[in-house]
Amino acid sequence: MRQRLLIIATVVVVLGLLIVLNAASYVQNSNPEQMESELAPNRSTYHSGATGTRALYDLLNESGYNVTRWRETPKLLTKEGTDISTFVVIGSTLVPFEEEEATDLLAWVSSGGRLVLIDRRPETKLLHDSNGWTINIDVLEYPSGAIDPSKPKDMTDEVNSVRPVQPTVLTRAVESVKPSRFASVARFSYGKPVVGASEPMIKVAPDPTYEDEEEETDETEHGKQPPPRSATKTVSKQEQILFPAPVVHLRDRRGALLLDYGYGKGRITVLTDPYIVANGGIQLEDNLQLAVNTIAGRGGKIAFDEFHQGRASSRNEFAAYFQGTPVLALAGQLVLLTLVVLWTQGRRFGRPLPLPQVDRRSSLEFVASMAELQHRARAYDLAIENIYSRTRRVLTRYAGVDYHSSRAEIVERIAARSSVAPAKLEAVMRDCEEAINGGAINERQAIALVRRLREIEGALGLRMRSRELKQAAEQLGP
Image 1 (cartoon, helix red, strand yellow):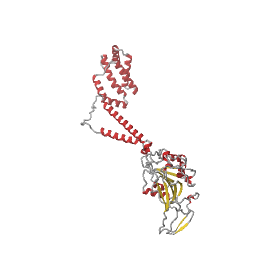
Image 2: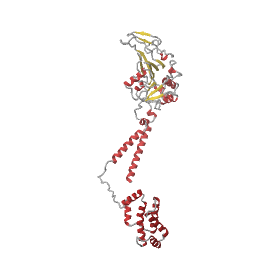
Image 3: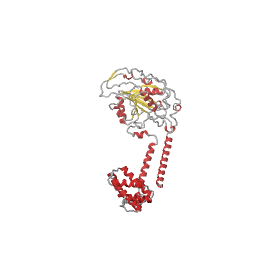
């Protein structure tokens, strides 16, 4: 018993140490100054830290917008029955886009979808050229690890508010926006594509997407004015094809912060500063309104990419729920500890010993078996006969008469030598003899008769013989 107590105490101490170590490491890692950094931001809609976007997602969801977290491969966007109209990719994703995934996503955009890219350096595979217009992103200042993204003063130091370039759907109700000091800018230029020899005559018609908006832009990077969008022109195989230029919605003196352009039947929107939609900066000025316009301005179902944020649906839901907590590490350590205990318990630490041989030849086994058979057969008269025969022998020996003496003589002799009431003793003996001779008796009555017999034996001081005591001791064990 002492050895088992020592083992239990050791296990409890080890478990306590594991819990303390995991809890201490979790508290240390949960320090915002160590976890939140613009060098390695977490732009997931599940993340509630300064660099996350959970506030934006919850606000859109509670405001009645149809939003969802997309945790599947982009290829499923083209699946029949999928009603996603806007696909949002925020920040540098934890899982990079594969060539096939980028191709599938752009094919979905070309078929009429809308892709929103919000990052200082958007994925180049997704930042595709638009019909001769080349989009370039210039990073003007790289984040520093010393900057705390939860402090707007540090993130927007010496940054002026930016006003919309023109009234559009994306700048509706936006007076000014406060970007971060690390915002990049977008530039675009026209590259004069040439029609292939096998292509027929092409007529370029105006894009109906922004018929109700003023989309005339300033001079491009090379000082060229794009052609009027309302012009319709027939071109030959060797002539260049003119397409609508990207629309700039928000810009500062350095370049464009928010623009969108057509891609096939769909559109691609680029916002070059994720701080505007992040938890740490969405509350500044009209950042929230711009974020809502940019993501939900066209209506329809909105999907936030969580597949490339490392939260694919193929992962275990239980593990994903406890991600970032010490529960998974603690569970793994408990499993390892259990395996070690089982392995040590299964090994022999000494010489082999024979199994204990249990002696089943107890003298009371026959008595127990017979009692079980009599109980199942409801042979209560036979049980009473077995018990009464032994008691009658003891009583005749106590009275000093022969076993075959009459009941009255036995009662008279015992009453003369003891204080037992003759009437009580005679009644018990009579009831037992009647049951043995075929009288009606049930289980309850049989137990009552046996109890009365034992009371008389106890009152007379009749003890069991040494042989019976030995048999009882063998039955009970050491």
